[in-house]
Image 1 (cartoon, rainbow, N blue to C red):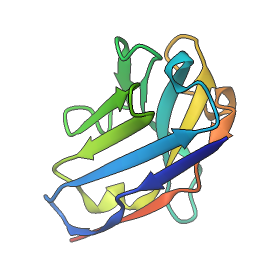
Image 2 (image 1 turned 180 degrees about the vertical axis):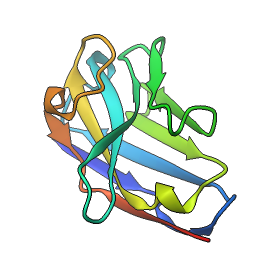
Image 3 (image 1 turned 180 degrees about the horizontal axis):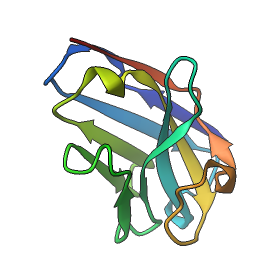
Length: 123
């Protein structure tokens, strides 16, 4: 199984980035997908999740209204559109896959992880 995250980079506060995660080696359409992030010196934290069908989506409060998660089961991809970025959004962002469930916000529920992509937001 491979989850390849991409799209990170350096952006000014208020700007936007779109992260993508390409999955291979698994039946993508039956997995819930999530994005997590880890800032330097901090614990990994939940960002957003979308269930297998795309019908259920949940966001952490600190990104709600600014970030949008989506998936394309035909292309085996999950994306995270990030708008109105803030310096505190600076982190390595990881995509992950979990067996179907409800509101997958706990990183321990995810069994496959990508390598991460760095997002840096300057003030």
